[in-house]
Length: 163
Image (cartoon, rainbow, N blue to C red; front, side):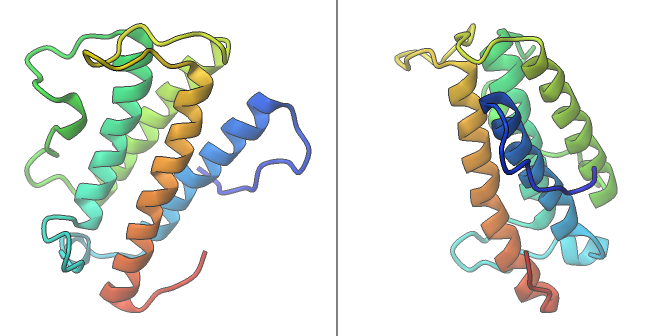
């Protein structure tokens, strides 16, 4: 995915999806050039289990959780908490990034086929159903927040900085 800024003027859908795609592409950019060993380093003292690999895996599960499980209502067979599924043992960073890209493409297909005002099919017990617009906005926020983690990890791992 090539990183582009969203258009300066656009309708709501194009603006929202443009910003989400920008954040998604920045995830891959922040991971470019890391070795497998570097991608497995836990360098944030307050988050000793967070690595570049676990964060990329988490972002994939967040995409699936909100767009497929929440919005479409797809059921996870045997999953107790679909947003916290662990990554496959020994998964390479390239594999995790490819899985993330495929999940993002699936999310794009879902968004393209629905109206922004449509409500999700499933929400956790006790939680109000939210619109597709809300989900996209939340994914922009969540992905950007985790990009802050990636920024800090990357700088601590090899000194690379920048947006």
